[in-house]
Amino acid sequence: MTKSFIIAIDGPAGSGKSTSAKLVAQKLGYLYIDTGAMYRAITLLAIEKNVLNNADDVIELAKTSKIDLKYSEGITQVLINERDVTEDIRSKEVNKFVSPISKIKGVREALVKKQRILALNNDGIVMEGRDIGTVVFPDADVKIFLTAAISERAERRVKEYDAKGISVSLEEIKSNLENRDKIDSSRETSPLIKAADAYEVDTSKVTVEQQVEIILERVRQATAKRE
Image (tube, rainbow, N blue to C red; front, side):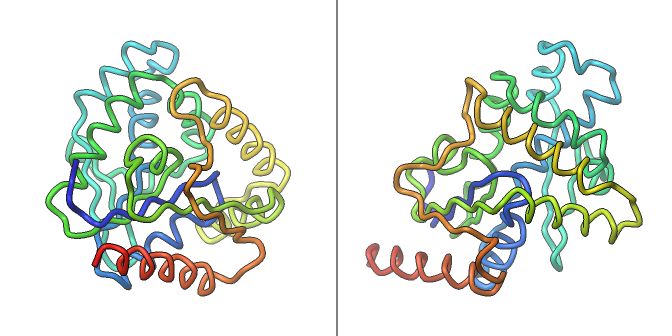
């Protein structure tokens, strides 16, 4: 598939995947890939084109749309068909529909192909999502599964919205996360599950610095095995 050193970071929404993955990639000088942003971009297009209820149309969007992820200075710029949608894909409406769109088999198949292509020709990548260690790169060098208590994840999301000047209740966020967990874990195609050989980290019990160090230690161990 690729000779890159691959670090797969999976877990539910709000578990700290993006924060950890970005910092690990930065420290190692690896390419950071946020697969969730790709599903959000397709969801945004489906909303704009009013095809949320037409799976065939959504699959066609996933197959034909050009998605670019550019990571720089702590920010992932997301472009779809050369349009910057970095902020748009984080809306409440996209949050509401991204899990139902992500469960469509044809959408996942199309985006997995794009994700594997993105990983080619790079010495090392840190890819985060929900099925990276189980489906996208089942032979990843390091597999991490992050989790956290639902209350902790909800509070993190509220803080994210507050930072953007958006007022959302804790209960609304908690309900949204619980619904997303249910859809993501029970979908037929590429469900959110921990890979058998993934190392689990409960991020509600450690600091960001500690979880990053835990991942880096796993990388050091895997690197030593390669040599």
